[in-house]
Length: 152
Image (cartoon, rainbow, N blue to C red; front, side, top):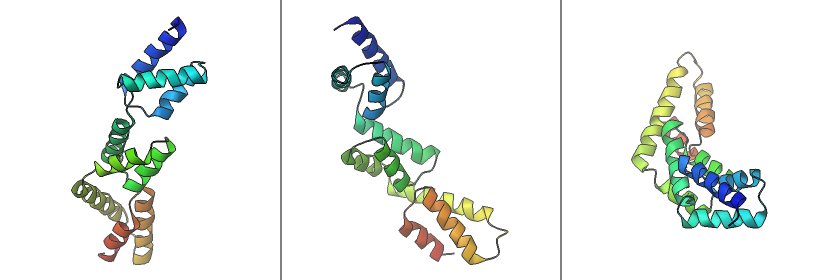
């Protein structure tokens, strides 16, 4: 292997070791190092074989992190992973890793906080619409949102 390829491999290993990455992020990084398509694919294969790059591991870490820190719903996580060109299988595994009890607890927490900010709103229909819009923007499912709103 030539020196420039070895240097690129070392940079890619460091890039992957620092934080979990998806294939498209690493591919973009390698292309930014002015490598050709066959070199990029060769390095990607090597990174996968050496377990520096694992899309399933990335998807689970991404979903869990965004769920816990940003309190995103499953819909928003799913679309974000699709934008990162993660496979359907990995997306399903990542969403399955979020427990139903944690998900429901977070949903109620986010919805109740939003409801608390709308205390001054007298019109119940406007209040419900604002909660629904906010919860949809956070990526929660319509059925969950409607069930919550029907209990108000």
